[in-house]
Length: 177
Image (cartoon, rainbow, N blue to C red; front, side):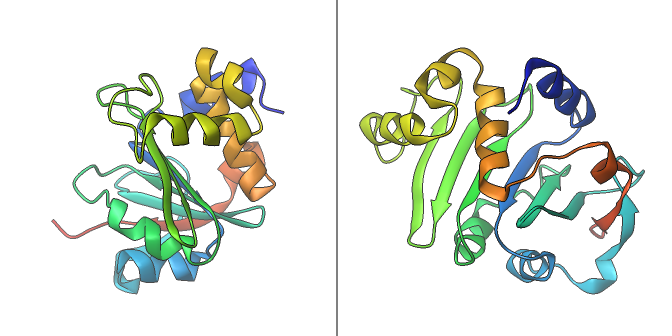
């Protein structure tokens, strides 16, 4: 269960991350979906210098931490969802906290976690129904949507980012300038 101390710890460590994706795809599938060339990748640890994206195995899937807003692409999410459910969240103080959830058939919902009635997709009733079915339920989404995102991601991949994951080597991506 995601508690307040974990949410703060995660937030502090991911302060520079602009977009997070938790998906059932493998790292190889992620590279293919994003069209990332192997020459743009190398083994890296979390918070390495000169990194645009970090892709790491987590539980029964993969987490993608995107640091480069110019390359952020929702277009990859349908391709990733062919391997199973896919949760996406903008994690930036300067932008709306857009949450998207994709299943094999495509996007199920997309909404601003702070203001769900601002352009919910496909509609507010669908978003509210999806939220009620998540592990945190409506109450957590109403009061602590950041924790609700993490709880939903943890349930999706059956694992949470921890200190060991942070110290492990993952696939780092740097894009040519």
